[in-house]
Image 1: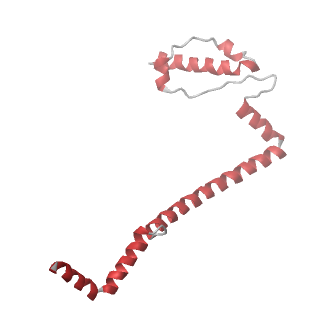
Image 2: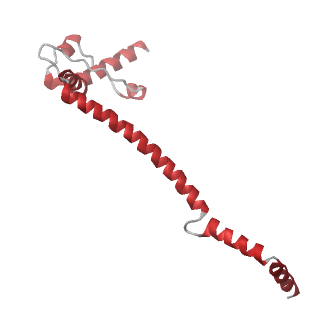
Image 3: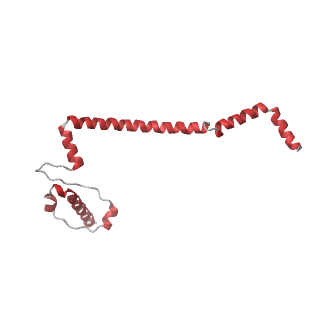
Length: 144
């Protein structure tokens, strides 16, 4: 019990310092608006502001593309050709894709002649892409 009185005597001598330390501990750690949580929220705000800037740039680019599509018929044609694989009646479409090396071992290639690929119609664009993939796989396997 004597030891408890000596600790109490020490705290009562420095009661203002002890009260300030308890107050700082409560503000720094325990409170729902503590300094620790404030630092976390500021970091989160900085991350969100970075995302806002990124999406703002993306919005401006997409708005410029939309404006170009509304004003320029060549831009519409370019998008139709690149994105939707559309073509003029006197043209042929060739689709080249990158083949994952892990797929080369698992797929057995079916040889396709060059004339079959060249004379594909509009409805056969997906078939053409698959045939080109098999040609690429066959060429890679033959080179090994």
